Length: 205
Image: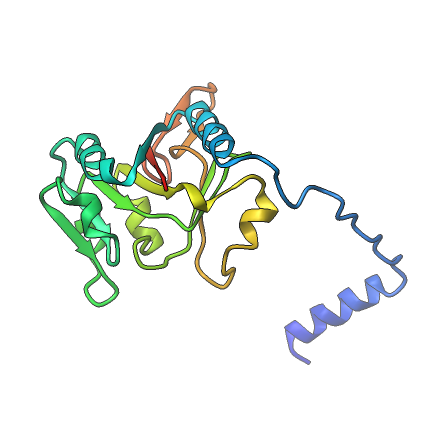
């Protein structure tokens, strides 16, 4: 008998008379009745509370806003990101599945610009799923400054609403503000396991 089989046998023996697990109620909200503008306002409020920067612009204003936020910094984009969005920011470096940048190369750039798959207004959460324009998790976590583009139509009111829009077999990255934690003296420390600065550009349709 293998160690694995032995462990599983012991677990079955210990649990043979365990009571049946109670049915979990699913009576939480699955949808939101907020309007498009209310979703933008709520998401913006939550992101600002997390100390992220927020801009709400129309699509024509995206290139200028991206260039302003980057302010001449070196930056990387995932393959598939709309080139028009970074047209006014020179020095675009592409990270692609065919030619992925090394950790050292990603660490050497100052910022990353990505798209997003969905956002949850109630929690201020942005979700990346690794699709074209969003890239690998490494690409969005190593540079110190993340500029994330969120289309207004991709904003959901509540979490279940957003999850239904996702392919959960994709590698999902959930972002709620810049990376931060508190040290032993409860002092906020940023950039522990991701970018220390997050700027979100919400694009009105």
